Image 1 (tube, rainbow, N blue to C red):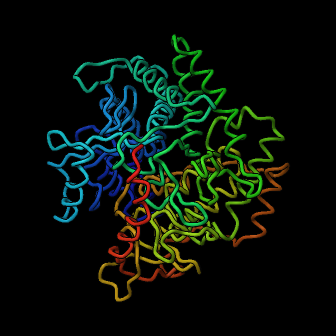
Image 2 (image 1 turned 180 degrees about the horizontal axis):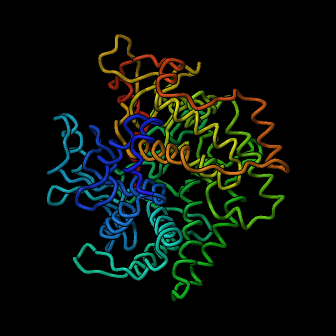
Image 3 (image 1 turned 45 degrees about the vertical axis):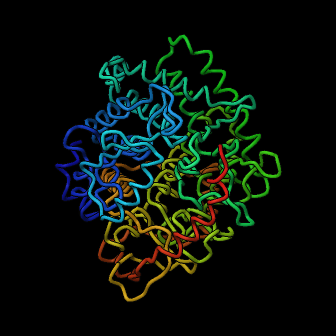
Length: 510
């Protein structure tokens, strides 16, 4: 399907989505830019590009391939403790300061950061991410299995101007992952730059990971993020399937086995009936973070589930899904990033990755997991809520703001009412545009037979009986019924509080 020929139909579901997506596609074949907004325009984050490209592979093959080649072109080839580059590692942020457009104060902030992050030839290239390398392998696997099975033989560029086969690039990425698996079978990366991002995964704000007593999780010491561990496990299985003749195959199999054994043993929390968001040092021991986040839902879209016995899979999936659809996570426009029951470091301030934000991409990752397990009715509930929220706000913002009482807000710098916020949502961002476009496409062209018996049917029926039945509204009806209130976000106080909160971690030498 050429989705551009169906633009009118898709725009009827989500107005403006085609124009927004077309603007994100690089004109010089770099793939998908992160956003068209104030903060991330002309910037290519490895995580954002890899995840976004993976989800548009059904209808935009060229952009997917362009993204793969760009990620391969900046794959690490040496060790640099400032940028955290390592051989085989996929980059975190690629920003060209000659093209990036920002306010003077934005430029000043990035200038300060770039002094300690490393800038060469007016280009920032950092590797502050634990998850991008696994995301890259998963993207290649999706392309090879859904678009072109011969893709591993193609040549991809390298930073020194040479080329290698995509298979060689995948092998380098897989070997980097193996090197991060410790003796206990945990996937752990190390921050070698104390001024780098403290939390190098999807929820990368400085207050994203905190203990119940409000103190920050310490990433200057050994730590492990749930989704980084799961995606590393997934990537190992994908690498084995992609390059079955590799001389390193036995290392990949061994790493996959250890990662799989450790996952349930170390990350599962029987008290909450979910996965902990991460393992961090506490009282000289590696302990499970006692805070609940949406991250457990991201594990649903991973291949390790197929290796479990059916009764085990039923047990764990039922627990995770039931927890996410509880009232402290589920809002009228999707799942909150953090449980309402969590003690948040910034209090009532709108935390970037807190209980008052609903991220479209984070929800979409859960939707994909629900679909993978055949829970289509529950997936549709999240799809409808998410699309209604996006249409109600009338923009492709990085995240939706829903207060503790369930009221939806629309950021507006001219609004009469103001509240404290850690970040202003980036506009026209791929992390929202891509889910919106993909869900609009599926709404028009794809339907699945829902479960009518068995544990999946019983799970869905029980949850659906306990929540409001939300249907997809027209864009006009969504605006009228959800009626988002315009608010102005004030960042100064939140910024100072955030800096004070994370300072104890940053001053420690990794």
